[in-house]
Image (cartoon, rainbow, N blue to C red):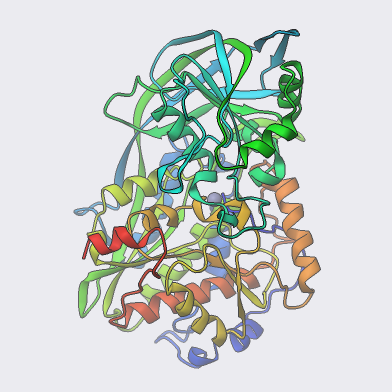
Length: 555
Ligand SMILES: [Zn+2]
């Protein structure tokens, strides 16, 4: 889901220049066949990217008719590289999931003291269910404004304090109260904590026993425009199966900001004032004296999708693993935009899969295997809530305590080389230092995450490794274009977020994609993995990181 620039700039990609700038150390080594050793191949990246983002794969949605050809393509490539199957002779790891398609009624009726009105599905709100119940009706359920929807005992903070949410629908704000507070100690200031993520809000509403949850969408705080909830939280949605799949909220979803304004004003509540009070300690939930009625019918099925996993066995410490990840899935076929309904996901994340496959190829061609083992894990269902990596973290093919680190790629820079290496979630572990050492060999400097308020650290697969205590790196160049500077890089990022992110226009275009940045980041990831694979080093979490405890427990 990572946002990166996808500018279709036609700059001639020159491998020679890249190699001489980027990787002087190993530039002279060659394989027996004369090809460069320990180098990322542009042709490999391009070949995989072109293939996986083509219309033939129909946007690579798990469970869809093109899942099979997607995972088979990856598997065949791994096999032809001579990589070993990671799951008892199989390259696949089954990920049991359920797929629920909710069909919400066209409207939602709101009853308030100053009058009733309807909100329209899609324009004003989106909702879905993630339980296996055929028909759901919500009849005059009370609406309660529950601030940021956060219950954090360690911070002495409870937005649900004193309210029994049974039968009620919570209306909550995105992000967390620290956002915009200019106080780093308050939550984490502008850095989004996990409490700011929609996944957390869904989880907490369930724990509170609420009938429903409506998140007020606001572009800056959410980090993405309304189009994203519209495209990502409608249609068929996947989740990992649970012990009892019929429990939980009746509806979860999002309210458009304009609809929220209308709702609050007809309840005689001032939204800006409500937001202000929600950001103060001691906030108490506010009954809105309003109710909501609507209904949904649901179709559901159980099925399993697959992670694809292959590895190279280390020659000295075969039980220790470096794990590369990239999600192979995207969002499939959806709403038509400008005459196109295939969400190809070229940047998101055919680019990551292609680059990790090029890294795998490079490892496979090394004259000697590295000391430690290296796992290449292409996970499923990232777009539906990081499900493939969540499943892997809960059911690892090799023990997590022997997993040295995770190196994740999601959306690899298509606009050319960068001077920066921007680390998302910087400050958690000394993976930062390792990345910086390698970045210096490419004449690059490290930048902390530039938009920490958007919570990107929680938005791709490395997060599930971090949550399970495995130090993880998620980094890429993206803010300081080597030839065209910072403004250009920013402009391209913005353009991607507005025009292409989770849209059918996230497509590969031979004329405009520049592979130099992908080669640069791919080389960096290859060098980091190789460095750790040939060392005894165990990356560590810094004191104060919320992920340290999980690693310490594993001893
Ligand atoms: Zn992605």
